[in-house]
Length: 492
Image 1: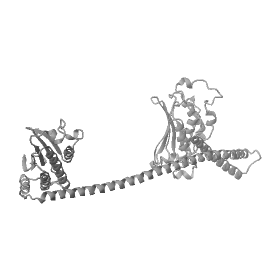
Image 2 (image 1 turned 90 degrees about the vertical axis):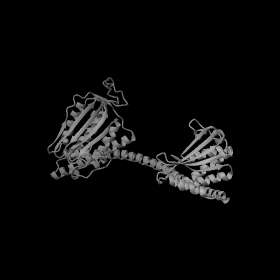
Image 3 (image 1 turned 90 degrees about the horizontal axis):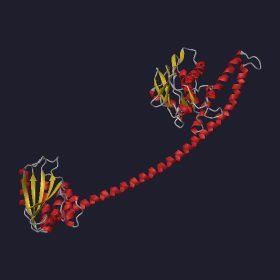
């Protein structure tokens, strides 16, 4: 239901100002916020000016719509015997939306466009030759429903207000104050925007400086890492010669080449020999890691049978079995086809896994298993034990260099924390990954998943079965590598 509130003629500049004052008064009576009152009054002023430019016989009707779910204030401008194009400065689009058109060329048309953007709905129509523009503003949801009687009372109070010559000037002054306030608000926002822009520029400069510092530190870290690798490599070579001498001389003493030894001397020589062997293992680990980080380790792929590899590992690691009841078991793997990768590196990974498991398993078994994934053409090696296990919070750190997890067996077994990190690097070198599943007190399972055929080399079995030249570097390194002692590592 639409109820009329107020009707006013628009036939002069004073009438335009009076229409603005009426719009502000009615919107205030209907419960609109101050900001919305200013928007409504400004929209009425702009459209009234456009109508006055088109005709001096126009009128503005203020209506109250209670038909919809939300009450609305309707402001209808009627320009008798005037074309709509003349009223708004341009023919509206098919949907009656002036904003969808190109910018108008006249100031009056720009005013109508501004009103359309300030109000909720703006419609354009030709009614019996009269141009009609209707502005709609919905009452805010938080405002109380305004009854028709209250709206009529507000309109009656507005009509009863005596017109005075001073009223238009007061309205103009009020409009000017609103403009000054709006300009002040805009200036404050502009100053705030400038301040934020400066802060953003300072932040950007700080970020740029931070990136430069990070780059500098990255370069420094790379150089330090390279220096570390060179140091480890050089020191490892320097340590090897005296260690070989100590081991050789202790062997001569143990063989009684220069005469018999007392029982105490035999005991001391064994301590010397054991310490030299442990230090040799550490030196070998350091040298291998340094070579991998420096990119100086060359892969020597060849075709081999996993069953033969397991057989050699079984014979090599049997002397490492503790005196207590720990069984080293190798699952059958005769169904796995020949593979083409670096046998020496695979053997080194498994030796470290197995020796590690033997160190920290007091009762039970250490089981070695291999499986071939035909779909992915990958080998999955696993070494499971029934040892002390690893807590979840430590399972990532065991693959970091020199990391050792405190455990009751730490005083009985020695290690440097290099074996598992070396396995991780070797596995990545072969194009694979290592994995770990463990439960504290129930054992651990280390896995190495590697391609059955090195990605950078021919994957066809024919290429692998070709005769290998004895002088060719692609021949198997099995003979020299398999005789090396497994590297130790403390992880739990």
